[in-house]
Length: 160
Image (cartoon, rainbow, N blue to C red):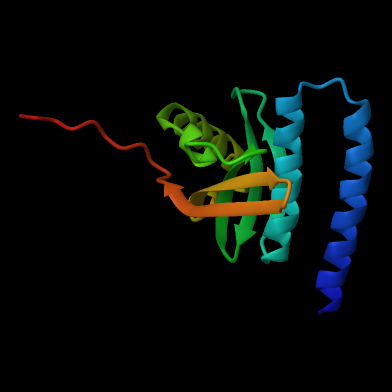
């Protein structure tokens, strides 16, 4: 095991222990705590896979919503929508990323890109991934869907 993975493992264990203590004192709704725990697990998972995380829970002053995680995968900017569950249900977690949510994420990604220097903004390649995180009794499981949807909304069909 490399020094980098040992360090990441120690960071994850420390963070998880501190997070557990904070959760016990939190007055947040359980589903919000599950979401935060899922995003935390996703953060460490993606770092372990070599992604460079540049933003967590990013918000814009002009757009409603947030970006769960934003990362570089080589020269590609990846917008992650994280869906966390404490059990596997009839439908997988990623089905919650419907067309309305995709529209919000596209607008948020556009707002995020506006922060980049103008000459580089147009050349940035963006990918939207969905990462389902299952916080199970037996451990954490991930289901990653790279390129889950397009950067551009599909155009309505014309039947002429």
